[in-house]
Image 1: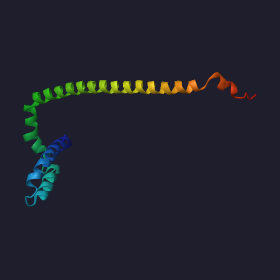
Image 2: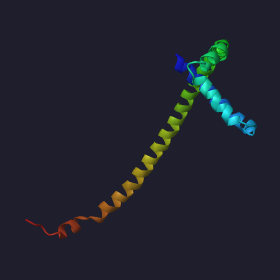
Image 3: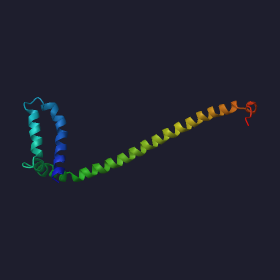
Image 4: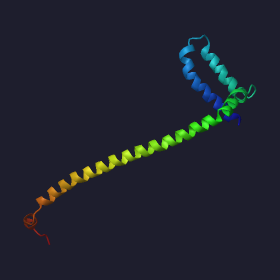
Length: 128
């Protein structure tokens, strides 16, 4: 549970860090403060990740649980519909390519077979 809390808090930190780096990376000792914060999160003595998770993350997730579940269901439905649509398009493209390849190869095969007449076959000496 301790590691789960750490990785959730660390993931939130990394997501926010992406945006904050742009604006406040010029701040003196910014990178040292970030390192100290990560060590504080990780330390078993300070239990920083556990503290942040219990005080901020868990209450926020609990309040927004219904909204999160609704978004997950919507995303699943949209993903399924999108995959079905792309699957149909892919199958149509594959079927069209297969029909075109068969039509082209059938014409080439018929042309080759036409070149072999019975006279051509009779002119080949029999080897016994």
